[in-house]
Amino acid sequence: MDSQLVTFIQEIPQSIIARDVSVELGVNSETISFILDTFVNEAIAAYRLVSPFLSKDKRILEVGAGICVLSAFLAQEGYDIVALEPDSSEFEVFGAVRAAILKSVGIDDLNVLNITAQELTPLEHGTFDIIFSNNVLEHIPDLELAIEAMGSVLKDDGTMFHVCPNYIVPYEPHLQLPIIKICPMLTRALFPKKVASMQAVWDSLNFITYFKMKKVARDKLLDISFQKGVLYDNFDRLEHDSVFRERHSDSMIPVIYYVLKVTRLIKLVKYFPAFLSSPMQFTLRKPEHG
Image 1 (tube, one colour):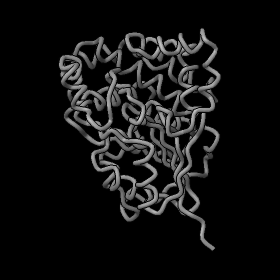
Image 2 (image 1 turned 90 degrees about the vertical axis):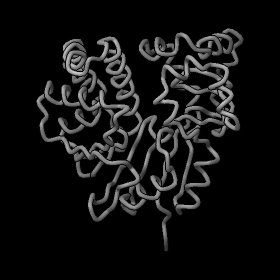
Image 3 (image 1 turned 180 degrees about the vertical axis):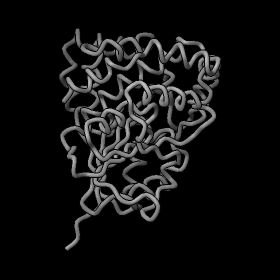
């Protein structure tokens, strides 16, 4: 179905949406185009994460759906999908772009929950077979409460899939800056202009780590397992994903990749332990009883 997703994306009139939303909100059209490019690119990555587990008899929740590219595609394909994206003044542009996308593809009944993950309850929102997010958990202020709430709406045999940065690795991917987990304010002091240019994103970060997630899962009585080789896969995206490569062109990542490639050490990255991988990819399930 990758080709169907690509076709769906190609039918979204991105340049027209960028122009119209720019006029509507008074935002630079290049900013809108960047948001579209980024979320479209990440929709493909998120789809590859969950596609092996999709089934039309399963209820699915996308947490932090953003402009809803993937949720809209899944809805069009007949999946029972709910998109969660809280209203936020910092990210008001998401709502305008999302509305334009849904209108352009003729979807007027996508179930969008304008709430935070922390507000999910089984009484109000039902339960889900699959819950997933892509680069979202690092923006949730009360991670423990959010995981607890998502766990409450996860069916007993359901699965959560999440991908997010691991700040054990000293790199902040949104701002593309070095960062030390124990002292993130040092990054702000050393790169004040860069941080100020993305202040809303910076302020939203909770600096989640592998060990933090293990503790949260244990405290919330959820089984957690981490996928190996995720860091290698992201280096590989630099080779084959032009949009991803362009987004990181001004960072240290291409340089590190080049050095690893030239020295033929890149293959060793496949075997890095999960706690040294950023991003990290993991699943959460309720423990089996009996």
